Image (cartoon, rainbow, N blue to C red; front, side, top):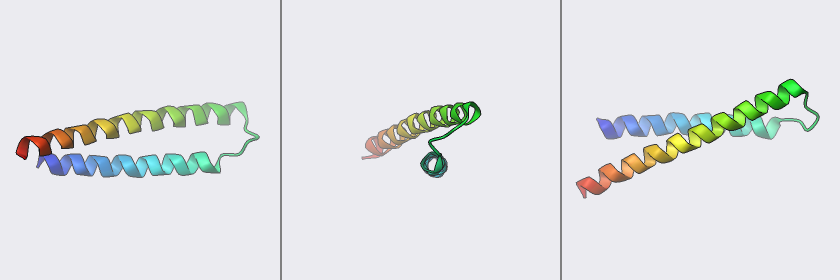
Length: 68
């Protein structure tokens, strides 16, 4: 059950990262201050999600190693 929840969480994080990366790609170079602040927030959220995904993967690795 724990493995299943970790896998679902990773899937959610991957989808969120994909949405963030798509939004970054679409960003225009002539941005307002508001847009730049929004992009900075988006980048911070992206970093947080990448970190959480890495931790979740490490957790899965630990579970798999313990069972092996």
